[in-house]
Figure 1 (cartoon, rainbow, N blue to C red):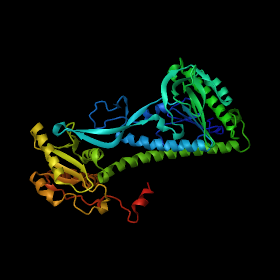
Figure 2 (cartoon, rainbow, N blue to C red):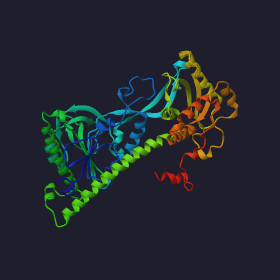
Figure 3 (cartoon, one colour):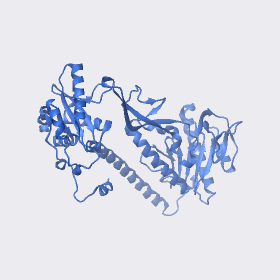
Figure 4 (spheres, rainbow, N blue to C red):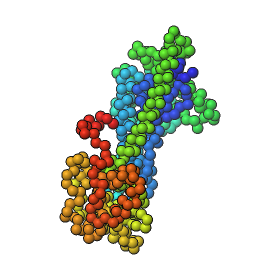
Length: 479
């Protein structure tokens, strides 16, 4: 019989840590599962950064997973971690304000670096490099502002109790299965645990409107025990101590949770309701999993919209991806350059990708010609130049009335046999090939033969679904 079937005496979840106990539901920090379904949350901040991916940031640094000795997140997860942090903090604040309890292992000072989305360039010519600008975020910022406090990394087991009696029994139950991995630099809340012989707190208690936040030393980890069963027994002892502590804290506000032993006795109609609740929760879990899978599929599709609104590195990466889907072999050029190298059945092309708030300009074509010349000097092969531009990228498609490639730049481009194509056209081409794969070869051949503006597949209304009665503000509510 599961905890849910026994009556949901006290719902406990961990955040950022997995504990092997049937009474606990383990929630990854980055997941969409809400904390508000639970009466107690046990939060280990030390595991948060490990849930996010590191990766190349298009910088001069060789080890992309580290910067200044700290974890360096990729561009996508740099955005996600900030969104997740804001969401989780709001949940924590609401959780304790409505009378629930947040247990936090004393935070070990840590930080990671995230991509700001800004880029700088250094050098010229072949030595020109693109550098990603990063900034750091501290683990302390993943807690509500009221309880954010500086800590110092320090490990030990000599801890003494000196605090409110309500924590004395709790401490006696856990003192042999915890250790401190950091201490607070100053007094926070009502400290009740200290490093022996000092005034350095490693456990403290803060009250909110109706609930509590309790900082405690870290639970010993599996590798600290000789046997797995010893570790599981320690976890069981820890969770039982947490339940008793929370019940004791609730007596201060007049709230109370039934002891666990009462869950084996059922009043008339109680068990039937518990079974129905359990079934409904199982259905809800399946629905949430289905929604998450569909969201991932939706987000993968939405990546193509970078061809409509993107610029910079994000646009270039998406262009390369789409060129490969179309049937070309595309990749970034030589390290330190911004060009794209395109191959198809013995043909070679070099592309310059630009996202611009206005139209393309002759200087963009001049940059493309520079890449073409450098490719020739390095390989002795004359490559076809492709100027791929997302013009007016900050303007909705139906309001882009001016040409993406103005007349004054056309003589320069035609004299050098450049093909001028917009990223909107690239998206339309991809969608057309998905509809009619037999057109692939002809479309690609036409692209390589085009000198000047590529004039096909330029109407987005032929490929994008645009509800006539929906404005931009209404569309946002339907996602």
